[in-house]
Image (cartoon, rainbow over all chains, first blue to last red; front, side, top):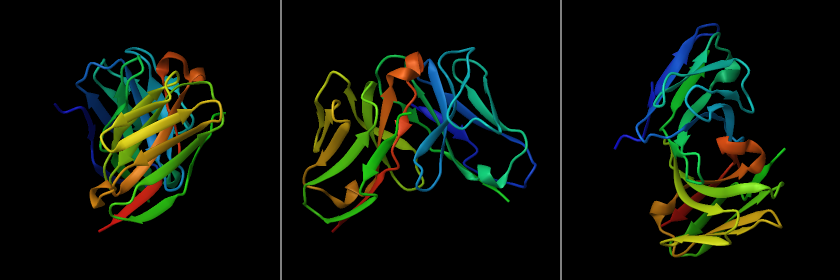
Length: 112
Length: 115
């Protein structure tokens, strides 16, 4: 059972470059989330998708866009990367009811 | 705005000791509170989830309590082992998040259990 799969695991970008982080879950969950984790700041929500076909901004959405391609896949796009976007990005999924979230292993992004 | 605080930021204990990790939150209007474990370079693994109507949950050597009125939760780890070394994060699901059930996280407590 793969759970939540994120690709790539590591990425280095130059300022201004663009890229898409991919996330897929095989648990038939309705909700999916993108978080970023920075030292001493915990995880902060970037965007989320409560169900297929819907997306909403979280706490720190500036500089990012998302696509809920289907129920399984939720991608995060950086159109013009900035050094402030250097972080570890986590995708998570969960059902709508009160159940634990499942996290991927993260993408470590460095923007120089 | 919901804020979650975890104190201490780091904790080091000898093997076999019982220990308590603390979490506090500012808004008691929550659906649930979750405790996660994060190993270096890895994602988060859910340990325990406490519904807002519950007072505690137990799993093996772990016991989590919730006092919603005071905005506090504790994670009790009995007979700690070196394998328990990790960062422990708590997170709350605010009622204001609606059906999305998004989480607000604390910064975590980095636990080291010394052999």
